[in-house]
Image (cartoon, rainbow, N blue to C red; front, side, top):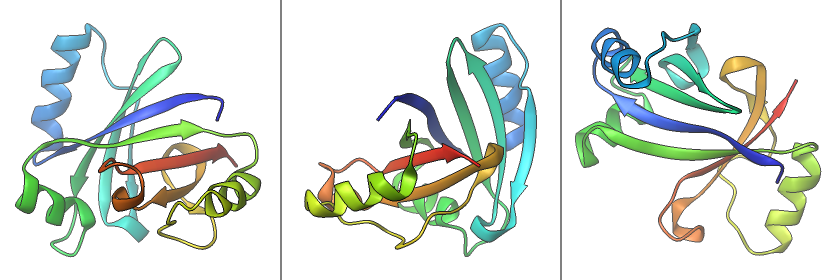
Length: 132
């Protein structure tokens, strides 16, 4: 793993969360993007080399909708940048981690992504991501 790429935060109102984080961080978001496959709208802030990704559900079938309903708003996942996502997925599988997808998929911010099940990572949803 190369670095912490971003922290994902589940929000119920992206516009309000953008205003809150802009005040908190002293900078505006640099990108808003919808990821149709995940049924989310995302907004990104940059702090040094790390990003904050705000995630709002765009449908009730979104994992973010389910997360907020079950646990409330807040930190959803931590993402680590990797150089070779397929090799890292293989390594993690061999180490006994449970992957939530068997192939990398397109994610926000021009990334290929794979999530690891929280039951295999001490209760934390972990994402690994690679630039496309």
